[in-house]
Length: 102
Image 1: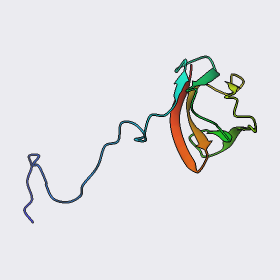
Image 2: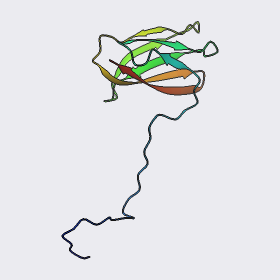
Image 3: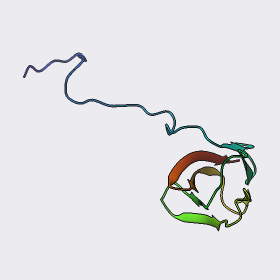
């Protein structure tokens, strides 16, 4: 190892992967996104069984269970502004969407 007084590029120490979005099939759209805290899910073919929203600390802040397949209107406007993760359960499939409260 050589001591240098000028910066040098070091390669091969670690690898990193940048993920811009959660990559899952786009079966539903959440709109408006971002919003003031009221969201709607659009996809007529999607039969939501369970819907949960988590903050970035992993705390569940919202939960809705549907039995008739109606896609609910979601109101989390009482929660702080920020980024949340919406977990949509449809049959045996789970989808995660990023939502933003402004």
